[in-house]
Image (cartoon, rainbow, N blue to C red; front, side, top):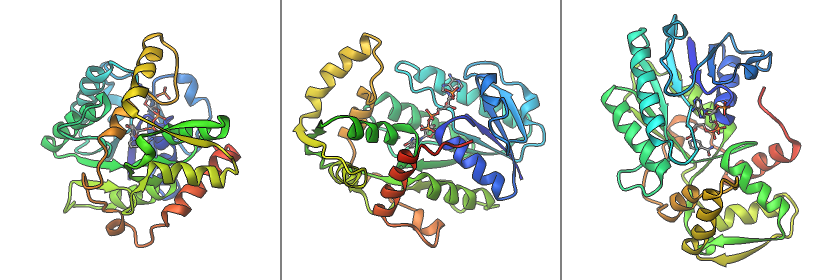
Length: 296
Ligand SMILES: NC(=O)c1ccc[n+]([C@@H]2O[C@H](COP(=O)([O-])OP(=O)(O)OC[C@H]3O[C@@H](n4cnc5c(N)ncnc54)[C@H](OP(=O)(O)O)[C@@H]3O)[C@@H](O)[C@H]2O)c1
């Protein structure tokens, strides 16, 4: 199968692209910066330049059987660009003959989402449902990238950290290798019984458990101090407004505050016969971060 992945340089997109290539597919990808294509991904058959919001070049859809949308602009205030840019890409690909499309959404996507991220993903889910697309909802993806890597770095670098509201809220997780395996199965389905796949371990862990396991595996002595999340939002908002880059954004905190354990049921066990334990997922991902293993 010829598969086009938008955001091939993303943490997850790269891992998925490499995995699908290893499984025998021809993988094409988009980046927004040509320098990212300079021989970095040996398995990539074709690379294209595309920035969200630009007019899509129909050449990139030639011969493509399946398009997977990974690109997301995480900067605050980019909701409109994400929604419009992704919609335009979807419609242009359809015009170019690509009827099968997968949108990578998130566990945070919901009608009553409070974070910009959750609202944006929900708006795009509604669009892709109408366009007969397939929706994937991964939990927090564990591996050497994304939000999890930034969380682990905090544990590695700081002796004391605030634990949001005691860290009791549930966090759905999936390690990047298991996610790649699940997507590899999903892309092979010809006719989908289901158009939505919730991809995370059926056992939701608490933030406290996730951070404590991180501390244990990384052999650190970090002290976690209970801290009200609403109080943390104030300094984070200030730093963001000052343009200071922070590892955990106000949007991340807002998304966590509304996490519940009954939002979406996990479907991972239906897709993969053998799902690793949550402890195995966590320890493997931390080892990848400590070893600095990067996708290329
Ligand atoms: N990480 C997680 O835990 C997680 C969980 C659930 C769902 N997801 C979803 O999975 C996808 C990938 O996430 P990730 O963690 O791998 O993110 P990431 O590493 O930050 O990658 C984001 C990608 O989007 C591209 N991008 C950003 N703004 C763009 C723009 N304006 N125009 C074109 N491309 C742009 C980036 O390109 P550059 O490389 O040039 O910056 C990069 O390829 C996202 O849709 C995310 O919402 C992630």
